[in-house]
Length: 118
View 1 (cartoon, rainbow, N blue to C red):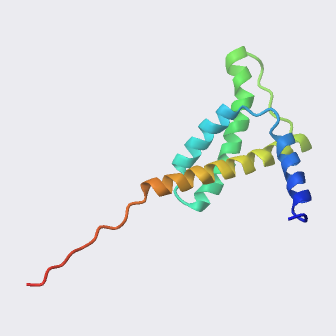
View 2 (spheres, rainbow, N blue to C red):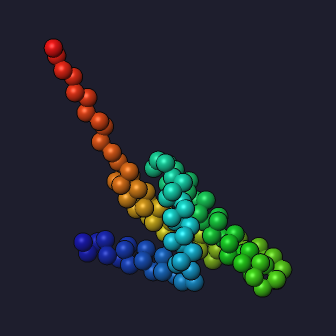
View 3 (spheres, rainbow, N blue to C red):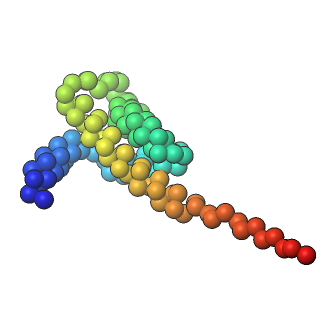
C-alpha cells in the first residue's frame, strides 16, 4: 500500500488542479445525458469523449449567449489539455457508474418457458 500512495497522491493532485473551476451541475447534467445515450461499454468511452466536447462548447458559448460577448475559442495549450484530460477521466467514471446503475435497473431476467408433457 505504501508503494501506491505516492501515485495516488500525484493522480489526485493532477485531477484536483485540472478540475478546479468546473461547474459540477453542468457535469451531472451532461453525464446523465451521456449515460442515457450509452448502450455498451464502448459507448461509455465514446459518450465520455463527446461529453468533454459538449462541456467545452457550453463553456465557450455561455458568454456569447448570455452576455453577448464575442466568441473566443479555447486556446489549445498545456493547461487546456490538462483540463480536457481531467474532464475525460471525470466523465468516464461518472458515465460508467451511471451506465452500470442503468444496466442493473433495466436488467430483466429471461422469461421461463414452461413446457407441459401430456
